Length: 329
Image (tube, rainbow, N blue to C red):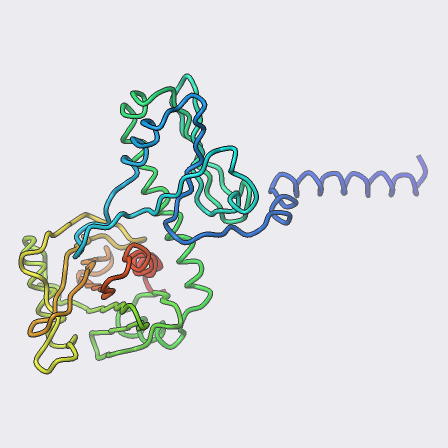
């Protein structure tokens, strides 16, 4: 074999290896795929009605219908959209969250990312009957958390691309943590232990209130954590009416869960707030968090005011911001 033939052989081998690696990592498919579309928390359900009747899909919708938690009015977490399989084509295939349901002799759930579009979640559910669906209802309900997790990752990536450097520095200097709210949040108040940032639009108001707590501010009961929250927000978050201030709604349902946010452990509390001496109110979610490396807890209080508006996406945005929380290096 001549020297030129050897060079040609080496070049061909390199090209074959390169093409293999690019195809393995879905390079060509990702370049060809369009971007996914649709609003957060929308789920497009593709129905195959050949062997699954209307009662089956009514039951499926019922299992996928969960509320957002304590709120002034009951609201579903997901926005469900239905389409028959024969109509599932064109722009519908670009939806960012798709659930494709089909008949099979065994129950099965599969997930596929970036099938028809980029940044897309496609869920395949195979099921023999409504009885099998009911038997596996816990797995169907878990799909909601899967969708929520994907949505939070989408939003947090977006926020990290368009974040406020000045707010990031303020939070890091005051609380020794990193968090990346989007640029349209602004600093409403700060001191040596507190940072309060807000976003205001004509229809909604979102706020994130961070406070360094003394090491003796420990959770002893559900009422105790509510008292801690009220004692911190009362002197700082005021309403438009003189003498009005934010506080927890005494008679509201309280949802409390253990939570882990990256390196932080603690509890999450969702309930309702109201303005004392005014008629404003809304939803709050508070995070009482600690790090193993420090004994001083951190309180993060997020609130939403959105009268007459859907609240699921606005609450998800606040949760996505909290998901970017990490310890300062």
